[in-house]
Image 1 (cartoon, rainbow, N blue to C red):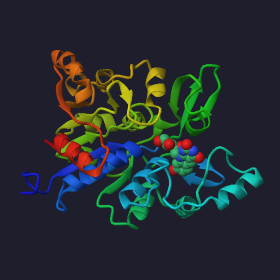
Image 2: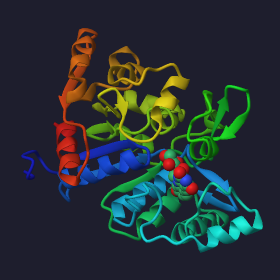
Image 3: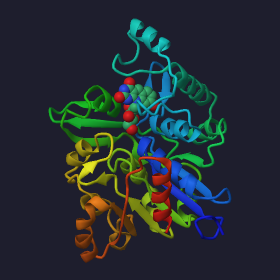
Image 4: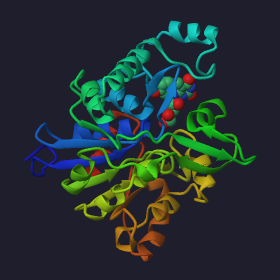
Amino acid sequence: MTSSGRAADMRVTVLAGGVGGARFVRGLREALSGDDEITLVVNTGDDLWLSGVRLQPDIDSILYALAGVNDTERGWGRAGETERVSAELREWGSGWPWFTLGDLDLGTHLARTGWLRDGLTYTQIAERLAARWPIGVRLLPMTDAEVDTHVVVEDGSRLHFQEWWTRHRAALRAVEFQNEGIQDAGPAPGVVEAIEGADVVLIAPSNPVVSIGPILAVPGIREALANARRVVGVSPIIGGRVVRGMADACLSAIGVETAADAVARHYGRRADGGVLDTWMLAEEDATLAAGLRDEGWDVRVEPLWMSDLERSAALARAALA
Ligand code: FO1
């Protein structure tokens, strides 16, 4: 038995985006023992080509956070970062002046791009990146295909997701998110097996639209979830507000209210053709539980603030329970 009082050798698969996903997984890693197996299926819908290199922001955010080399202040990139190359790229007019490629972070992008040119897949590259630090989890991209997200805004123009998100801070009213080419993509090798073979699949409190949305949109992943043993989702909304990021702008674009029960209904119950068996919502949103229960939902009300590692671990334990 582990310290949490349950049998060892548990297999847990998490569907996750970047920063919120990383916090949740750090807690999960803390809550589980070394005999347990954690597989992360990570969103790659935020990916982009810039100045000739391939960026995978969610993969990198999770990798850096689990390795303990992330910039906790800024929320993305490496700790102790310098920006000499980025300044030089700006002088050349290469890339986007509002988007910074840190020098250490660029090392990751250069390595990845070199491996891509050598013919490696994103799955193989994630494995190589993860081998650098003892991160204690298996990191899988959701797909080996490139499915960069584009955002159609009110005036009909179409921007790369990163331009909408970082340059415009999600302030241009989005009317549609398009994961280019996703209909022809398939789950990366190992993803379906990780979902179907897990004791429990957890949907991290990541952005439901642009982090979890692309993962669920990869053909074959919803089908794998339908065959999973148990699927538990954690609300990214606490007290009617998004915990971080600008998920409210994404939710309103797809006509979903920024509320914990609305996000649950957006994912749907497996019994009704959705993806979840259980929904965890915050104590601050406890009044929403009754309505969901009336609709047949299995709802757990828990403290959801992941303000430190112990609280993240407690949340992970609650999700596993
Ligand atoms: N976010 C910013 O707000 N400004 C940036 O210049 C920026 C650069 C950047 C470079 C690499 C990387 O992996 C992430 C970066 N981010 C930056 C974060 C990123 O745009 C988003 O927060 C995520 O993609 C949304 O999950």
